[in-house]
Image (cartoon, rainbow, N blue to C red; front, side, top):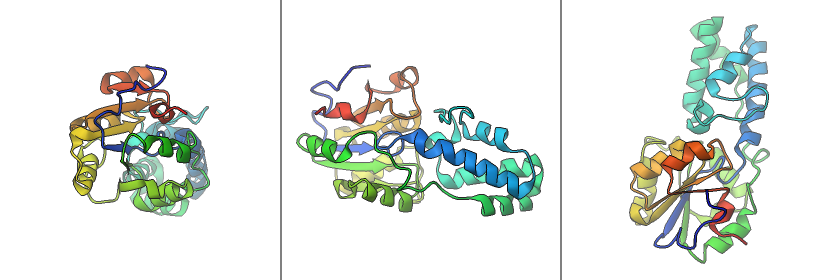
Length: 244
């Protein structure tokens, strides 16, 4: 890992596509507590002991709330996460109908504004980055409505020329589609695009799309050993793209 981005990391780049959770905002503070609250509501609704199994299938450390890079929460659309939880609750003893009813009663997505803590001063960072790169976008495994609310609350919605979200109707990470759709919309070649993310799914998406630069950050679910083979460079944070 380099302590800061080299001078040429964004040379020849006309568009930077950022992941959201774990890249722009702190991942574990948003999702760790949500799992615990969901487990409590599901157990109350079913009378079953579900907590340990729920942590396991979602890929969350029950002691620390840290989300593992290989778990469902790392880069899976919420619709698929909900389906997986329903299947788990059904097998645990609720049956298909009981599981569907219990998840419906217990389901509550994290507040995309209250729980969104930026990894750095994003407003200042984008002001610095704009001197080097003319356009920015977001590709996320989250749905569009919470994504737009989060970006607006962070004061950077106007900085994003495009967004690709999990419920947009095309394959999500690690498929290349989010990057390719954004590039097509903005008329920017993938080869002149940088993809920045904290998970293997982010980096594989960028690589599959033929992105000119694939950049990993260590502010989310991936560690250096996991991300280094997949990235052109591993940074501590997006802050290192344009240090103050």
